Length: 150
Image (tube, rainbow, N blue to C red; front, top):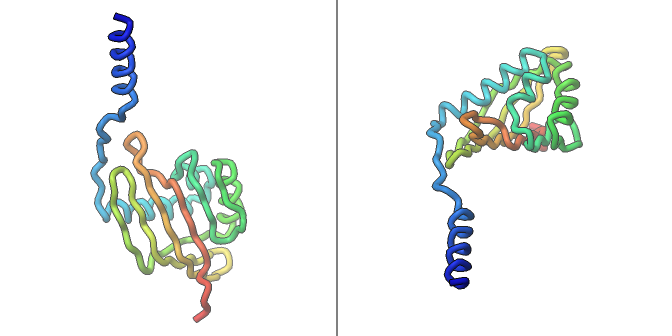
């Protein structure tokens, strides 16, 4: 009897540890491209909180004009407080989008025009998006100035 109880308990524990079938949120390349547009529009608000709202709480930001990785919403907010002073607006010049189950990657080249100074900064980027609770958010964002001068 004791053996049967232990076997039944082990089977129930194993069943509860098995992940349920994951549901994949449908997404298209156009919808992923629109996520950059949403992020870029949030820059135009000049409100760091609106920009940070595009990121998951545990996102990684490796920003264009800072050597410091940003791992928390407070760190990302602090970065955007300074970055937004430049009045940046990005424009994608080349991209590749890859779709997955509740994840998407948008990587390529973009150019930032700094409205405060007129400076133009060509850079490369990678945005990784995750669908969390029905909302597509940035889970990692890497941006770096182009290394070669043309």
